[in-house]
Structures are given as structure tokens and as C-alpha cells.
Figure 1 (tube, helix red, strand yellow):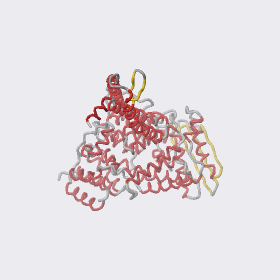
Figure 2 (cartoon, helix red, strand yellow):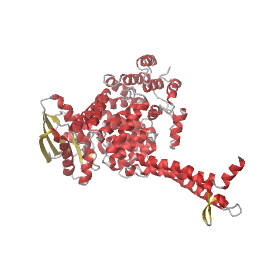
Figure 3 (tube, one colour):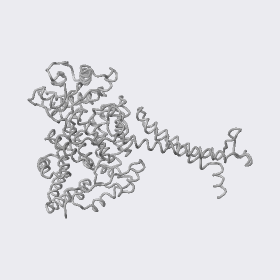
Figure 4 (cartoon, helix red, strand yellow):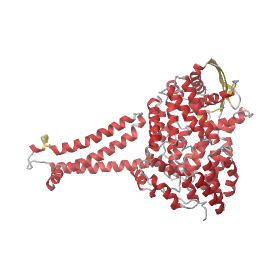
Length: 628
């Protein structure tokens, strides 16, 4: 056996193996970074990895059986030891290995620096400077109620339902939102968030007041009348400062034309506002992605359910939304947008700590399979290559490839900087990676641009909660409360932030609104428990905690959070340790967003992070723990 290993060394088989592994690693890293940007399907990367894996034993076999001589490649058995040059070849391989290692190390350092430099999703990723993160004064320079106006900015007000059937409200709201979503894909057009503009549904405020409050120069308003198969849509684009109508149109058609109407309205608005998009790219971005009217109707219903859930806190409407998307897919199996929305539903079910998780009793592996199927179909059928980048970022995150997800979403936001979903996603990644300074910079940019979508506001609070900028967090939290006084999701996070900052009285004023909302019972109980412990009411905290143990024993996030609040850290750790395995790793990953979660306590999960070059952040103590 000793002679065999000596022969392996002499024939440079070991050196070839090392060189091949380093080469493969470099190729995989470069492919993983570049292929998604070119819109390459998943099978390209998988095929590349497969070929590299197949090549490994072939390379070793070649090194054993052949030798590179001055006369060319010859079989080793035909080369006598007296004239063999394997020693000099080995030295060359040593130099090649050292060179490859230097390149690999350089790439690793560059890749890490790129992640740091990706702190803000500006049109061009900017290099990090020594300038401190924005302070509270710079953040408050733009009041949320009077956001600075932009030339190409618009708010889409909810169209008025003129139908005799009040049940058509969902159709009108869904159509309005899809017009809004289509416009929001235009890079140089700032579109106010749906929840912000829909706050003015049935409002008696005039156009200039609404435009000033939303920080836009233009308003799109309209009405929809649906009677049987007939559809009448009117829309008008108004310049807010003087009330001038830049464009108006009435569509009196059948329901078969509803998709064409939505696309025409978006294109006409983009043209009227003189956006820089070429006609083909614009048509791609505003496309509904389906020619099936029934599928489109189901999709609109899903949108309405989803947004209603966000506003009310009633998470079961997400379930209704997912069912609507499934109907849309049944009617049109190539409907990319419906697949993407359905994939998002399944992603939320994987996130144990999300308030919309737990709506299905399916096992983790089945949920993951459904997510992958939906997202793969969304990528396959989406004709807009820029949208595909965002889809791939979401998929990378679910696959726990956090750094790849960060690269992709930064690339996407460079081309679609006004996408609120992508803004929230980026902030969530910063939070999970402990990149709190980068989060503050991004929050300031998003805030200055449009005053925030409520969901971005929620994620902004979370991403800054555990950082070293308490004044910025306080300022932003107070502005969010002012801007979204009726949004229970914003208020829930605001109450937690104020308690984290030590503002017990401020948090107590928010708590009754959260308690009276439709938010899940365990979340309402957590808010109450936080307040009780912060106020030093340990006995009350113990009673609330014991009631949670009885009422919500199957809610791992609530059980873990409540134990951390009660100061029972050992019990909290014991609760999550069973999740540190391959099957439940997704459940454990969802706790990364909490600054008091210690990833180093979970060896398998820690290995997943370290394999990507991620160093977990140092956990923080809960400042409002009950003193028992």
C-alpha cells in the first residue's frame, strides 16, 4: 500500500486533485455570481456543477495513466523512470496551486468587500466611506407628511366602484393595484406605495392636498363600472400643482378587454410622464403576463386579499389569496406573476417567526417543494429578465444562500430602485446578516425617496432595532407612527422599538390599538407581555406567560420570544435545539432576524453560515426582560 501512495505522489495525482478542486471552486463561484444576471435558467448552473464533478475522477485517471513529456503526452507505462520529468511537472503544479490559491483568496476578499459595498441600492453600488451613518437630524429633514416631490412621480388613487354590485369592490381594487404595480416597474417613475395611496379611498381631500401628503407631482384617478359582460373604465392623469389634465381616456368594452385596458393605461401614463423607457421594454414591464381573463380576475382577487391582510392584520386572508393564485394558475399554467405570488405565500410558511406562517399543517419538506415549484415556474415563464433577477434573489434566500441573495437583490434594485418589495427584502437581509449600519443608510435613502410603504417601514424598524443608532431608530419609529397611525403591523413593531429604546410610556399608548386589532392572538399576547415586563410588573408578566403556554404551545416563535422576554434563556435555547438539523434548518434560519438570537449555539446551522463566509453577529440581551 505504501508503494501505491508513493506512486500517486510521483505521478502528481495528489497535486492534480488539489489543483482541480481549487479550479472548480473558482469556476462555481464565478458562475454563481454571473449566470443569474444573464437570466440563465437553473439547469445551466446545475449542469456545470455536474460536469465539473464528473471531470474530477477523469482528471485523476488522466494524471495516473499519462505523463506530460518534452515529446508530448505519453502513457506513463511507456516512460522509463530514468527520463521521467514528473518531478519538474510537480514543481510547476505546485506553482499553479499557489497561484490558484492566491486568486481564490483574492476573490474571497473581493466578494466580501462587494457585500459591504452593497449597503445601499442606488443606481450604482457605491464604495463604502468613512462617513458615519445618517443621524436623526438628517433623517427627519424630510417630513413623512410632506415628502419632497419628484418630477416623474405619481400616486394611483383607488378607482371608484361605479357598479351597482358592491361585491365588485375587490375587482376594482385589484385592477387599480395592478395598474400601480405595472407603473412601479418603470425605473425612472416613482410610484407611491399602494397602502399609502389607498389611505385616501373615499377621502374628501382635494388633489393638491393628497399629492403633497404623498410627495408626488401627479395623481391618477378613475372609476370602473362593471355590468354583466360590459366594462367601462375611465382614467385621468392630473398634474397636482395646477390641476391640469395631462391625459384622460374612457374605455367602454367587454370584460375580454380588461387585460388590454390595464396595459394601455400603464403605457399611456408612462408616455405622458415622458419616462425614458423604449416601447418594447415598457410593454414588457407593464404586461399582465396572461391572456386569460378568468385567470387575470383570480389574480386580481388574490392581490386584494393580500393587501387587505396587510392592512388589517388578519393573516387568514393570505390563505384566501393563495387559493386565488392557484385558481389563476389552473386557468393559465404560464402565468408568471401568479406563480411568483403563490411562491411568496409558501415562503412565508417557511418563516416560523412571520405572523403569516403556520397557515398550513404541511411538513417543511412539502412546503419547500411547493415553493420551489412555484418559483421555478415563475422564473421559467417570466419574460422580463430584470424581474427574473428578483425572483432568483428570493429563491437564493430560501436556499439559505444569503450572500448570493444580497448580490442579486442589489443588482435588481440598481435597475428597479422604487420596488418596495425589493427594498424590504434588502433590509431584511441586512438585518439577518447583522449589517446594521448598512441598513440605516438604506433606510435613509428609501425614506428620502418616497416616505415608505408600510411594509418597508416595518422592515426598516426591524433592521435598525439592534444597531448602534438609537436616535435614528427613535426618529424613524415616531415618523412611522405618525404616517401610519392605523396600520397594526407598523404599530406592533413600533411598540417593540419604543420598549427597546426605553420609552415605556410611548409604547403603552400604542398597546391598546394592537390589543384591539385582528392581529394573531399570540402576537397580541407578546406585545402585552413586553409592556408588562418593561413596566416591572413581573407577576403580571408571569400570568401572561403561563397563559401563552396554555394557549399557544404549538407556536415556536411565540414560545421562544416569550421565554427570552421572561429571561428564561436556557429554556429558549432548549426549545430551538431540535431545529438544528437539515430538515428544519429553514425554521431555525427565520430566527436570524432577531438580534438576541445566538447562531453560535447551533453547530449545524452555524456551519451553513460559515460555509458562505458569514460570521454571526454577537447576540444582544433583551432590555425589557422580566426580573423573576
